[in-house]
Image 1 (spheres, helix red, strand yellow):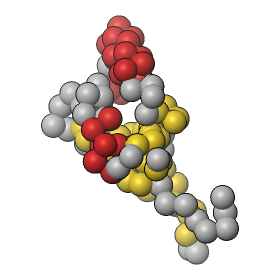
Image 2 (spheres, rainbow, N blue to C red):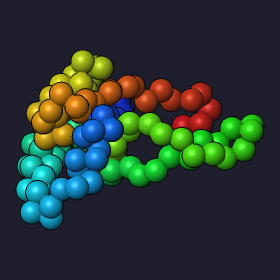
Image 3 (cartoon, one colour):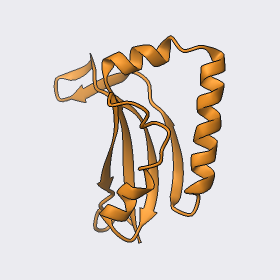
Length: 112
């Protein structure tokens, strides 16, 4: 089986709405996440975490930058399509302002 990373993506509008959510809304969201994680536990390798601010590191140094990555989860599946299907019922996908990008984790020869 191959590992795949699901990157949780959200529009700036959605990120701002979540930042303003109430503790009660956050608790309800967590209950939905726990139910999804339990349902998909056979495929989940690493549940992951929400992600914060981004710094860009390049030959020019370190600088602030912006992206729409809100978090990640790593799953294991027989195919790319099967990995993507794991996320179909994810509670992150409540609005058209959110999506999940699923990519295979390619092993590096000699680094295993």
